[in-house]
Image 1 (cartoon, each protein chain N blue to C red):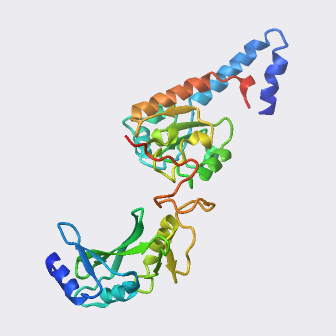
Image 2: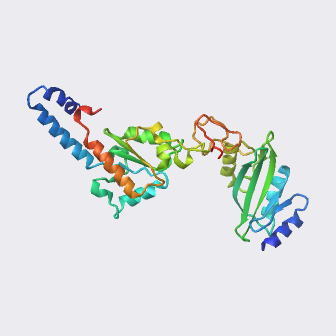
Image 3: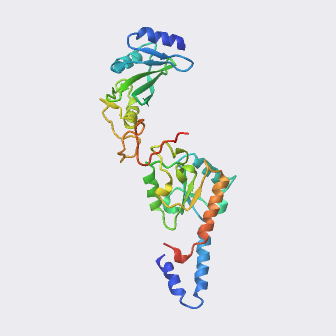
Length: 156
Length: 168
């Protein structure tokens, strides 16, 4: 499927769940509401023309005011890929686990929780992943994170 | 080693004993300096330069430096590459497993001071001298094989100056 076809197909099929953010030269970005995550993910995996069978990565973004969680999905069969993201409040940073849909999400979600402190419901094994085992300094990729030996790049 | 360590204490009281101790000093330090076997410890891109130095073009072997895969057989750690906070206890463990005398070369900016990861990094140890004592620092990102050879020659000079009475 061409990129234009893909964008219009998704816009038509999920018109009450997704908003199109970008479909320029790069990959297309959609935004969905956090409560639609499981339904939408299952729908794009089971859809015959999309068939997104591979969750290639989950990224976290801290803008300073809110969190964003970006899911990059691809279809090996249909050779397409796109991204969709959720916007979360700082106080209520939690998402549902998508392991039932893509089992490979397990490690991505552990990393997301460890580095951003975004809670993943129904994950099952939300434990220390990449940081040292005795780490006790919080979630280091947050904008407001600080530690005694941590130095920010000085402003010019 | 205990006997040899006490040699200078007794020998230097005897007239002419100095000749024995200085000769022993010479023999020991020369043989140590010419067979500095190093532990394979490449954690990042500096390891590429370390491999290049070990290969035929730069030929580490002519300095008597051969790589060992076990800390128990090696005299020297060339810490080639970024040491993260998670890796730091492992470096300490390997250093502790080596037999004395043991030496450490900090190769590349990351091991000297944190280098390119000095700012904005939560994971990188800012210099391995926080963990183990370092004999020679080699800056560069990564250092050319020539710099590494220079660093090893510097270490050899240092080893050659060692005397039996200084042994720990």
